[in-house]
Amino acid sequence: MDATPVTVTITGAGGQIGYALLFRIAAGDMLGPDQPVRLRLLEIPQGVRAAEGAALELQDCAFALLQDVEVTDDPAVAFAGANRVLLVGSRPRAAGMERADLLAANAGIFAPQGAAIAQHAAADVRVLTVGNPANTNAMVAAAAAAGVPAERFSALTRLDHDRAVGQLSAALQVTPTTLQAVIIWGNHSSTQFPDVSHATVAGRPVFDALAEQLGGTDAAASWLDDVFIPRVARRGAEIIEVRGSSSVASAANAAISHVRDEALGTHSGWTSAALVSRGEYGVPEGLVCSFPVTSDGSGYRVVEGLELDDRARARLAASVAELAAERDAVRELGAI
Ligand code: NAX
Image 1 (tube, rainbow, N blue to C red):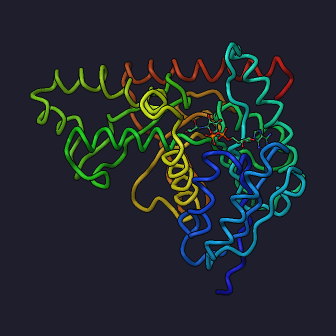
Image 2 (cartoon, rainbow, N blue to C red):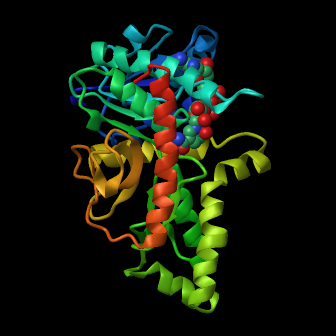
Image 3 (cartoon, rainbow, N blue to C red):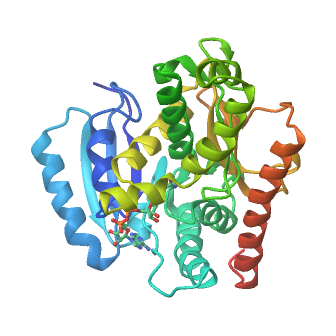
């Protein structure tokens, strides 16, 4: 194998999602079966031992594609020469913590990390933010990464996208691959808008298939409004309630799919990702908002020109208003 290795940096690598990510990346699930990788695992001092333990297990897997692993609590070391960065580590919401405190704590992590990426990463670096509040953390990191183009930063809404596809495939009793053009708009939060108005199943509008399955267009419309949208938007809470802990393997799977499709292309389909808005669909420039996206292997681009009816516009506007409020809060802190 003589391909040049890709350096992948994962922050919070000693945590739950980190543990679910590392082995799949080393196995070639993210960048392809012929692409050697170097892993750089960044942790805070109290997380270093857990990341070191994962590094020992990676060695025990003897992965053909894994060239080396380095564990550190120094961002300058972790981001040195990084081609791909997954920002997973973040400050969770503690009991009694206000939203403003959560945004402040995370701005204190993501702004210095954005600056360190600009200073130390490879010229072609691309950065996916997973740690919550993911959209605003990505915006803070992008703003702090002087000289790195904003389109290199994204935030994960692929889990929401895949949750939507999972719900539809169960309702329609079809395999997920028959579904196309599902969209998540907005924030990775309960205000997100899972939209099926352009979606097809085996080439036919999803709405028509739902109406047939559920006994009419009224039943299809109420299932979408009363079951599908709230269930997808609150699926994270449902997982916590049932499993007793937040989504881990599904989140890692979504992060891997996000980077894989960005790097290797979405081919004829599209997916959802949160990108730095350039004003598409009226979303204020600079907000990190989930859109329908495609990639030809050189980075995600927003699918433009889709028609949104008044109800869809109102749902998107509500989520964008939340993103704008988060931006205003971090701006007040001086983080952007
Ligand atoms: P864990 O608490 O298991 O792991 C987080 C790790 O990050 C810890 O090991 C911690 O030591 C480390 N860390 C904290 N601050 C750090 C810093 N400044 N630098 C480096 N490492 C740091 O959480 P986990 O379950 O792995 O979840 C990670 C993040 O993903 C959370 O913010 C979570 O809310 C978010 N999620 C995002 C999802 C999405 O779709 N965007 C879905 C899943 C998940 O909820």
